[in-house]
Image 1 (cartoon, rainbow, N blue to C red):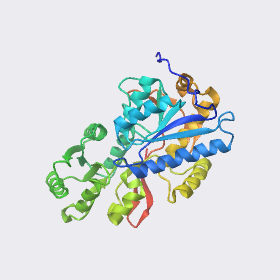
Image 2: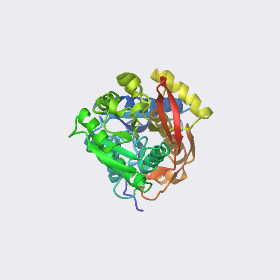
Image 3: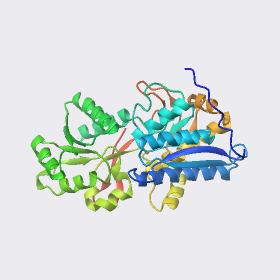
Image 4: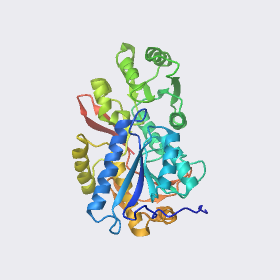
Length: 370
């Protein structure tokens, strides 16, 4: 595939640093806590790179832009970062935002390594400019659907909000479950109060309710309503998008937030590198690092390897994705072309279905691994 010409990422104002753009949700309505973890991983890795001599003696500089979960803001940030001479753009947590950034990066000829977003179609057409660490939604959410089936949950209700991301997730679940004797009914949270949603769950005989909605609103009120409804004591509440991963969830819901399975992208046991980075991240964050923080660290590790071996020219970086071979915190990272996915993809980061232990909500239980 021919790539459009692009200015070299080496054209810095003073020639002293190698710049990486970083897209991170740091203000609402973005998921600020996820952004904080992502930035902690990115920043820790950059500091370690610079402590080890930087990129051929030049310091690595992280140029951070807050996306606030706004696709237009993210696209504008890619424009700005390109003009600032970044060698590549990295990061972003929200899938719809990452898609806007990926489309803009592709149009401008700027390499973009997406850290956390999972939407399968990050770009409408295949691109050489974008690579991704997080697993595609179709892969991870099928694993989640298999967990539901294994737990005997076949009548699934999904609480939804209008969004390409939520609609895509609902479609993955419906297609995968329908082929295996399961059913999925969608409940629009814009049309139903939490109490009316509980009535609908009873009417449909649902055995599981999946939260395909934002946090804290309306996820927190829905959980409280379902937990407080005596008719629904046997229902499983699930959150495949990972809302219960972060401490903010536990702080908002307490015991009600436990026992809600979600997807996270960690191995059952971290290796020596993951253990070391995890310890550093814990000290930096003041709490246990989420998988999002590890994604941030791994992002910089990949880009550092590429910059050291291929230089700062943007086209050279983009052409290097298929030759990446980096030891990440969660395993060896390589990129390949995967059917149905338009970007270079790590196939696959480890995937778990976990929940917070009802007996000890600060502890996570691994329920299923894919």
